[in-house]
Length: 228
Image (tube, rainbow, N blue to C red):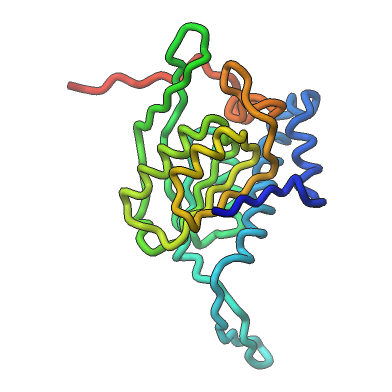
């Protein structure tokens, strides 16, 4: 399995990462969401270089030209609600002809001290991913539990030709969990791999709770009652 870490390269992604991490910039939710989206766009562009292309003849007003194109309809972009939404939009801005999938998976603390975390998956909406290129985009790869659950749920919709997992910040512990869930030819793309997690399972130094910074603080992740 290949891991691509953009923090090891000099690129404009590092500029957006600096603003995402900066407490003063985090007060501006619009800027925060836009930077998450922009990193998604840049990562999608870099990922696009790895796809298969075939020439297509395009007619111009003055003649014809052969341009290598990829089949965007063979791509499925999947995300984990809710923090993944602006990151997902960044990928969709680039792969605008792709199909989309959404997984509702959230962490639940299992003890009073908030040091033990479980993952609950409640909702999935996806097309068939059989034989297609599946991009699973989620900004934070901390414990890896929600991404592993998303991979498991999405694979019930068929076996993809290739799986790419894309995140903004990853912890080494989460990378190992996802590594075990991915096929050997899977690829993980990260804007940064940080040093690890604290006792509450948040990435350090990270930048905090991505969902809260994008959309406001939540009371908790609650399951809604179902009709009997």
